[in-house]
Image (tube, rainbow, N blue to C red; front, side, top):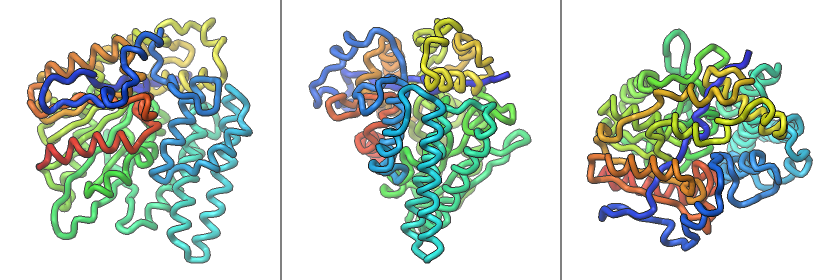
Length: 434
């Protein structure tokens, strides 16, 4: 029954030693050493948590780091997060879902109370966190669960409500595409009458558009960028409509670019695109086909998803292996398979499903940044693809950055240190658009 796809484990990009004058190695500043990480790490698992926060279950601890990382972008409160996980049973998918849903309901009620009294800022803050807590519960929820769609829609409704309380608002948008819509969010920068720089933010194999708002949207706005993100086929709730991941991702991305470039406040010569996880392949592939994208960032570069998936534990995840996993890990990975249109009882099918999900770095002509956490860079295939990408990129304005483990910037997508990630990404785009 289940089908799914996931760019989730799609890698992050970077070379530790940067030879061009423009290149820089953040790992060198930290001194923890990529080589050291590589020796320790026997297998590549994109959901490895390189600094334990709470759970012994690696998959669960990685997800917790993802949630905590949203604190600076108004998606989480540390006290609420730890109050929630204290009640979660180790490795239990059902316990994880129940506790995040309970916390979401409590926080949403606070928001409604504030709004009823006219306290718009307080209401906005509560609605944002409640939205993300509902989203967090979906990490371990299978798509055939009766609560799956309704919980996703609760998350969306709360963020839409919060969005109306911003000035300028965070707009909920729907971009028509092949008989359905690509749902997402847009916020105009405060540039007065001038056209502004714009960030198009794309995620990977498990992404909801709400994730990307809490991943980076406030950082974009603070730096004078219009912000847009959407669910592509395979993401959010779209697989419920049969819209799973597709190799020709440039087709739905074209619809996104058509939409955003039609807005009068968007400067067409300063349009940046940033992709995390599987988005590290989607963004450069789109740039290869569409010169309207003027600069890109990949976290990290997924030059070819097929060998990357072949190097992961999913490649050998037979039913006997899967039965030994915690229910949290099992549900998470099976949900990924569903997004790729792969039967949920055939996890190794993710490997052949990723054939054709690739791009040619030599045809990506705009300025390009590769950024990857030091822990993830320790995997040989991730490292190889970053170097292949960097070496072939033709534009001299390119950079490879490995963010350091000893600054807590080591995980997949650098979810646990959004400050360092945002510094690297936006400094690169600002310099590209000078």
